[in-house]
Amino acid sequence: MTGINGHSRLVNWWSGAPLMSSRARDDLSHCHSQSQDVKMGVVASEIQFHVLAVDDSLIDRKLIERLLKTSSYQVTVVDSGVKALEFLGLLDDDNGSIDSISTSTTRNHHEVQVNLIITDYSMPGITGYDLLRKIKESTSLKNIPVVIMSSENVPSRINSCLEKGAQEFFLKPVQQSDVNKLRPHLLRGMA
Image 1: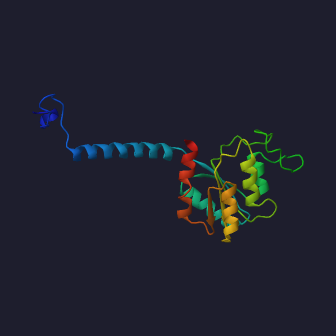
Image 2 (image 1 turned 135 degrees about the vertical axis):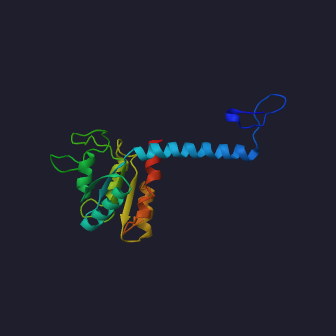
Image 3 (image 1 turned 90 degrees about the vertical axis):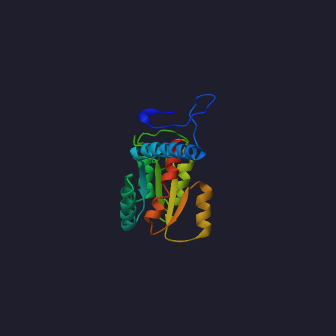
């Protein structure tokens, strides 16, 4: 039987429905699957995720900022846990103390959507662990993924951060392969 554009096609002799070999069916299924992946990839690539990077070391801040921007993230960098809390709206401007964490909005909360926070563990004042705790205790911020970085490979420290809710723990210097691990956490947050 001749089909579209003069090409022959196989049909089921009793129903007239087109026949398809199992190979052709598998190929079609694979193409459909790839099409879905491409659609999802297009959606994910059209969204620019915003990452707050926190590190007291200028060199480490510049490195993580460059790696994140290379991966097409919008990046805000701050040099302390206090500035991160201030940016997130968890710090009271009047007396420099940490606001009541149970409130979902605060006076100085930025209207900027932050999709992920990556922070150094060891910082003067408010450590990365303290920052993680405050974020996970906040009703409005607790679902934001937090990644901790450290130049020290201390298993008890790594475990305590992961138990408190950190999604990843990266050893410094952070590399592009580490940054590539962030996207699944961001995509999960969209679902």
